[in-house]
Image (cartoon, rainbow over all chains, first blue to last red; front, side):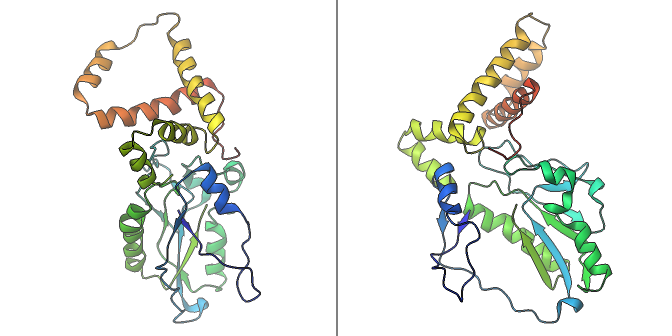
Length: 172
Length: 96
């Protein structure tokens, strides 16, 4: 897990929506609070969103039915990811993750993995198009270096291969 | 806990930290719940064997003798969650 740098809540900076969250996580999972100083700046948009191809990257553990389930029992985590065809319906998908409340997501997957909302945005022309595939993994990973070195790199390469102009990243 | 933190605990033979981690992992970040979950899994295993049902001991011995310790350790975690689920008391809905 990567913590945000120390940021005073000044007007020109985004407010921490859940103050104390990182301290809570560090209490429940001591040693998981990792501070980084080498942030990669967000890339500026090269063209309007309405002309961009958007991909979606989620740590919600959502995956197509029939694919090998994420390893939610491993004590150090699962460093694999699944591709999720962007034209899937929620009924085609299932959740394999036990570290966040999934009750409401089982009622409506869009609350955690808004695939139908993104399909609508593309259909309405708000975004130019969706990449053929989205990407999903589980956020329970105790080795942040491996996460960054392998999983994040692999997903980044896959995102580029999909021809994405914009990536929507959504933590669970 | 980060892997670095855990490896440090192993190097220092810090069993308390490792035990706490296991409980936190199995209790979704709640140490007391994790301890209870461990007990629950063992109780469930005990309940399944009280009537001395026929079991595939050949499979068990073959697995123990032919699988790598890492695979068996991984299986151990799977069995824990399997038994907890079998108990019907499933707490792993992220609400702890």
